[in-house]
Structures are given as structure tokens and as C-alpha cells.
Image 1 (cartoon, helix red, strand yellow):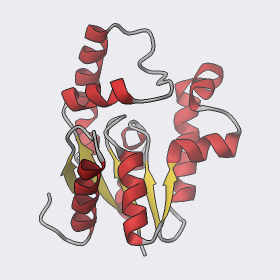
Image 2: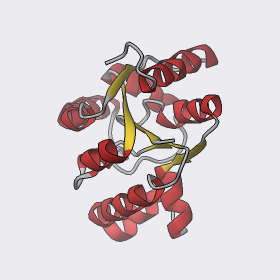
Image 3: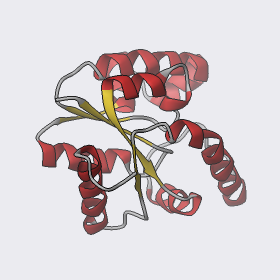
Amino acid sequence: MKALILIGYMCVGKTTIGREVARRTGRRFYDLDWYIEERFHKRIPQIFADDGEERFRDMERRMLHEVAEFEDVVISCGGGTPCFFDNADYMNAVAETVYLKATPETILAHLKLAKGRRPLLEGKTPDELAAYVAAQLAEREPFYACARHTVPVEVLRDTTKVAEVASAVVAAERGGFFE
């Protein structure tokens, strides 16, 4: 079975939805950031601090190519993955791709609930964070829009919302009515 790759901005729910889609479809789930951390024995923030974003993006590209070759998998990518190198084209060539699309307001709500450090967001005031997310989302939208399918995401406050989005992803992959 062809891989299913979820893309979208950070904190849209790619990992949460990916796990649920994998469970429903009987596939293995891989979070690309976690895979990188396991392979290189280093947390993403530490890779950014030690090696810089350029080195991280190269590692990310190589690990994307590795994981996308696995059979029967659902992969959640980091928010920037489709925006570098030829990653978006590669993902569309080897997998079904689904863009989990959220508004800046939804992303900010998810960021408030999120655990863990986000290197690109550290040290920003709430107003700076809102402006940064809106600007970066607009910049990345053309890359995300390359996905074969788009599924809208609202605030994922409960399992009902997660189940709704997971159902929409499965329907989109199977030729459902989503974009």
C-alpha cells in the first residue's frame, strides 16, 4: 500500500491525526521529527542549536526519502518539510499527500496546548508569535497546497474532533469528496 503523508504547519495535528489514521487503516505510524531524533540520537532543538537549520533540513530530506520507502505507513512531516529542496514533489511522487489546513487562530490555540520546544518560535511575545505564524503560514501555503488532498482542521480539543478529521483524511485518500 502506498504511503500516506500528512503535511501542514506545526501544531495542526499531524501527529495526532496520523496516529488515528494509522490505527484505522492498519498501517504503521511514523512522525518524521521523532524518526530523525531516533536516528541521530539528538532532539530537534539540539540539532538546530548545534548544526543549524540548513543541516537539519538536509537530514530531514534524507530521512523523508528513507521513511517514504517503507510499506504500509502513515507519515507526519514537520511543518517545513515540504518547503525545502524538492520534498513536495518527491512526496507526491511516492505517496498520497494530505494537507491538514488550519487558520492562524487554530494554530495559535494548538500551540498553547502543545508540549515541547519549537526552535523557530522561542522568545516571541504573543503578538510576535501571532504575526510570525500568520506570515510563515502564508509563505508556506504554496508548498502545502501542492498536496493531492486538503482537509480542514479546527481546534482539536477532544477525541470527537480528532475522529472527524481522521475520517476526512481516510475519505480523501480513498477518493472522497475533499479537495
